[in-house]
Image (tube, rainbow, N blue to C red):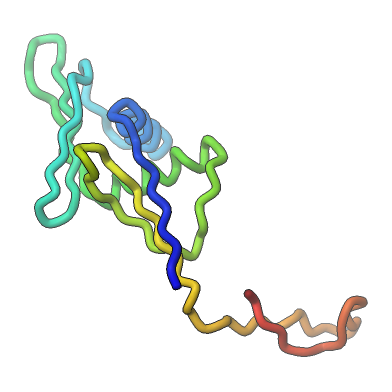
Length: 133
């Protein structure tokens, strides 16, 4: 069984997420005014943020799917939107809107977690293996 969540973002949210991430990472940003966002979904979803400088020159940024996905995950974290850590996250275009699709697989085998073994036993249980669910 799998669970699927979709988060749909406006163009303004995409631009804000990308610019915030680049500022935090001290990556270069073009000088100018954002004129729009376009998407290309051939061989992954590529995002282009159209930027025009004060002289009318095109300073647009073409971004990879990985960079935009990371920016959107950071955007969600900054707004305290819970996202499952162990899930597949990918971008899709749905009705022209950028959508972060989150898929959780509930059929994964359980992971074994060992309790900390030191000289003092745990007060809640004897030393043993337990399953993380």
